[in-house]
Amino acid sequence: MNMQQQIDEAFAHRAQPTRLIESGTSTTPEQSDALWFGRDWRSITRRDWELHPDALFAFTPEALAYYLPSVLATTLDSEGQWLQVADALIGALDRSPRVDFWDAFLSKRLVGLKPAEYEVLQAWLLWLSGLNDAWEEDTLTRAYETVELLKQETERVRRLVATTFGG
Image (tube, rainbow, N blue to C red; front, side):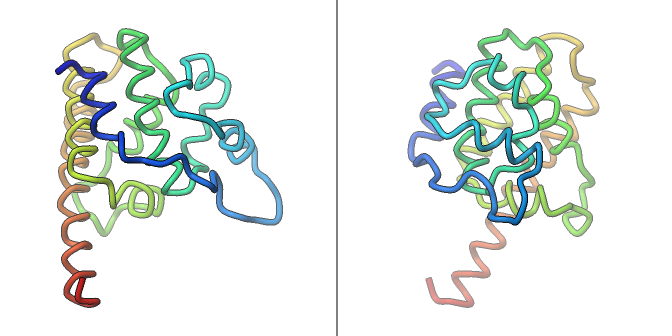
């Protein structure tokens, strides 16, 4: 199975979100970028991400999970060429190995994905590491390790919820 097929399969269960951003009194430039996306993630192009790169940081957790495969797929389509939104995602993943040092973006938006989604995210990072020098190997390694920690944290939270609420 090629990388695009892995992305499609891992995220196939995701429904298009009804809310793209959190409600607020005024709309930030990042939120304006996010509001532009209200369509199927498969139709998003490199050019779309180039015009609206800050959307990644304004999406609700559900919207980020829904549009994340678009970032991965767009990078594939661009043969690994540098893409601002991919760089932003890698930067968001290039974190401390201590969960208690993570910011709200990471802990609220990227904890809670499905195991297959984390696995394809790690496969994408490995794919990038084999392409070119657009990203430093140390950065990609830390990002990969952070995804592993995200998987562990998600499992810890799921066990806690199951124990606390019986389900």
